[in-house]
Image (cartoon, rainbow, N blue to C red; front, top):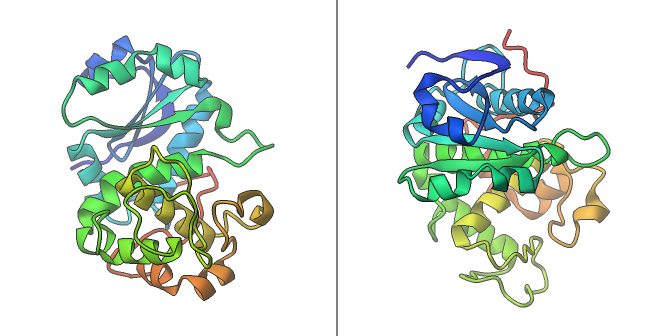
Length: 254
């Protein structure tokens, strides 16, 4: 596959003509598409593109760290869809369209929660979910599988204080991750857990300890290494090659 990397917003190209009913803006990151509504500011779309590029090319050399990751994402029809607001994205009709098409793997992001400066940048989370679910997991199913008894789910179950197919009313004492969204099934919980752990290891949660403690306790890399060495070993496994630098939205591709 030839990778394209022009992080400038343009129109939806002919190869994605079916998306023109829903979006008017487009950006390509190593073949992985980003679509956005007309009301979404260009700078928010470009910021998301930079973050996606940094998750895929952590050493910033202009090539994906593992070309199999974006290749896998493209093969799974994975992409990011952005609306100016939740209502704007809903009004695009994309969810009705994607529900009628097999094999669509779309992750949503809202411009009003993207790189606002006064709040945590949701791009770090939503783009991480996209790459994890459709790039890293299918390329490393032995370690990262969201199915119970993989290395990652064993670590997650320990972090929650046991195996819970459904969100419990109360997590056991000693659990350091207490996610309480009962609409998030077990596989979804895995994606949330690895997001928290990975971004903590990369320093994203420093300074947010009080804000996030109700859900996630080990808010620094040092705390994470102390309480959850199992997930740190997975995150630092060279066979997976996950990014070791937190995206800052300033990808250069030198």
